[in-house]
Amino acid sequence: MSKLAPTALRALNVGDELRPLTTAPISRLTLALYAGASGDHNPMHVDIDFARRAGAPDVFAHGMLGMAFLARMLTAALPMSALRQFGVRFAAVTQVGDVLTCRAKVVERLEADGRPLLRLELAATDAGGELKLAGDALVAVP
Amino acid sequence: MIDKKWIGHEFAPHSTVVEAGRLRLFAKATGETDPVFSDEAAARAAGHAGLPAPPTMAFCLDMDVPDPFAYLAEMGVPVQRVLHGEQRFTYHAPIHAGDTLTYRSRIADVYDKKGGALEFIVKDTRVENQHGRPVTELRSVIVVRNPAGAAQ
Image (tube, rainbow over all chains, first blue to last red; front, top):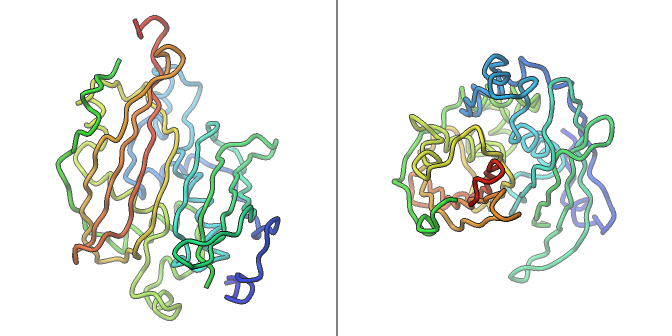
């Protein structure tokens, strides 16, 4: 895979971006598979009859599915062992059919316990540019 | 309104085994095609001690109890009124297929905004592996949407 080599990771500067990740359109099959894989069996995500009875027009994606896509972008570029912290705020609901694009940008170089770290700003947006998840990650530089 | 007595409440710990098949299904569900997340030989070749759990998996395995939303019912919160507001992970050590994880959760805070129209539950969870080593800490912020007037 196209992981950044340690030298490339050390060379990242404020303003640099990781390679973005664009998902396939979120399908009902994706939500069914994610319900089983994640263990989150909340019927609002997979049972349209239940969702309609609860007043929703349709099922909608698990927020944590969007976070898993952000995680895929991070682990595609970085060694997983470098990840120190990873957080998101769920800004808007992801609907069936949405295509998410995940982005990460270096916003700070810092040090903790004498070791260099990068702070990344993360975002997942739909094709119309609506922000679905906003987040940050703290990554150790080798 | 959620009783503030819940702040500091600790829930009974639970343990679960990280199964390789679960990790493979998670990779399929999330469109992950890197064989490191589905093929143990590829994982070992990439330097992992086994099939690794991806970064958000520790949250999912906390669902491996008969009713993962029981704590909300215990606190008097109807599950159809909640939204996942925020989620944070702090990583201490890797998780691999075959590990046994133990989860210990407590309510770190309960607060409200907009005169009680929105309430927030902050739940902190510590995850240890079978060697007693802390692997991950989780912080979940759950948003409760209260109907108008219910706050009073």
